[in-house]
Image (cartoon, rainbow, N blue to C red):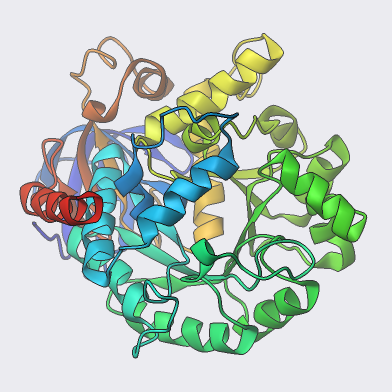
Length: 457
């Protein structure tokens, strides 16, 4: 894996913070940040890269271990299948998951993210305890495995330890399948401190918190952990399923997003993951808080969640990030494509998520880079001085991009291409993908295969 310190990368074309530019030199400082951006420059004395440079895509929501059950949940049961039946399969998979398995699964997941154009991930990490539900002697055991996987692959990490106290609304006890998640508020805050120490092994890492959902916390517990964690990113699943909306109405007399917004709980530190089942009034209220809505279109489609009204949210000046969630398929372009296609299928119109007269691909990239950087608490998402040097280089000779230019390159990648359009990826000034491949791909794949053989054997 090559490293650029105080290097100068030259691109024939690059998407900068203020638009497309030609003959661009990006200076990478020794700390992995962009020191300067110079359009209209000469390639002399630089490392000239072939392709089109765009900002790395932030991934705001991942459960890395779930990559291990991708493709294993597509068998119909005897009754109607849903998120809730899928969840039971996921719980059974966790029964045998050991720390070394988690690290192997996470490394494979992060490698695939990098090769797809994601350069930073928000890991919504809730497997804290051993298979029997007892805390490990080192409370950061599992968080440390996530950090090790991020470090070995080179992806940027925002670690989001999950607070999970109950099994359902009203403080109902957790079920057996949730035993590896459950903590009280005080123990959780100690776990956050341990996770922060573990994450320090990853350059430029951030540690936030993730109250799992309104099903899994009470108002008092939520308030305690948010106050106790300080000014850090706060992520939460909310209104993903209609059953959750119904349960919240029964318990609190309010819909989940309505309840969460009540009393000014939410601000621009928050990322509301999914928010699928929301009213127009709730959408406008969320937009007014400055919070990010984290959408995971592939997983939401796979689980049958529904479709978030993204067009209306953007019209209200809402902020959106994308995530890969269950990691059933890891593809930044596919997440963006499905986000747009979901709106088209529901509303029977085209080019929903574009500004008038503009490109859908360009607006999608702009929106999720801004929203993702905010949700992950990072200075990234734009090729600009001071930001982390996270750069995705697209192959301009790929059939999906040939004959196009500027915003057309993004439309080609998202609507006519796939992961093979991604030629190179740089994270924090380090090249982690070259010619479409991560240098440790085979070694990581072998560890992943060995872990799955044990877990599924």
